[in-house]
Image (tube, rainbow, N blue to C red; front, side, top):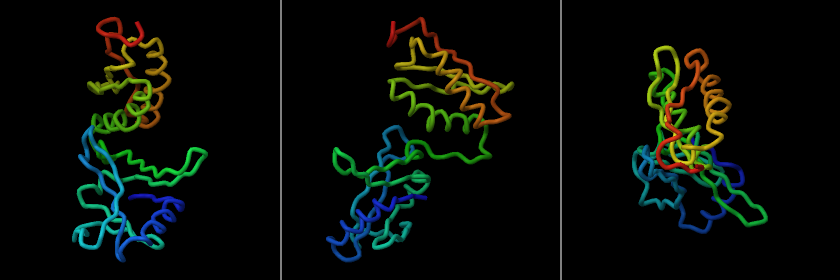
Length: 192
């Protein structure tokens, strides 16, 4: 479920050695499954352990996950990195805002999950986003772009070489292409 790097394990073991005996690390998600989801790590004293907590043993400490956060922490990674700017604990949880869908879920749900989990985080770096409007019977994902993507001169490249290429690869045999239904010439634009 959660991968904690060796450096993060060492960091947690050191921190916990200065806490009361039996204190664990709790990894959690506040507002899981929503756009406001936030992940965190905190100390968890013995008296705060819940009976249905999931306990993951590591060398020198244990990490706890509450039952409600479990499915949103699938594929989560905790790391502790040191560089010239100092040390930092990082937590990446790609499923915190949107619960991972099963491989046998309907095609629309799988494509939407891919858009929300993989494509939108990339577009967000440029102030953009996209929504899946529909998946046609003949296998085309119909997308609407917004934010920084609306009116961007690179949108065709983003659609064809980015989103479409990735979707065809991930949804092999099910998705034939992507169509952009955004009216890039209308409304407020980032680049016009």
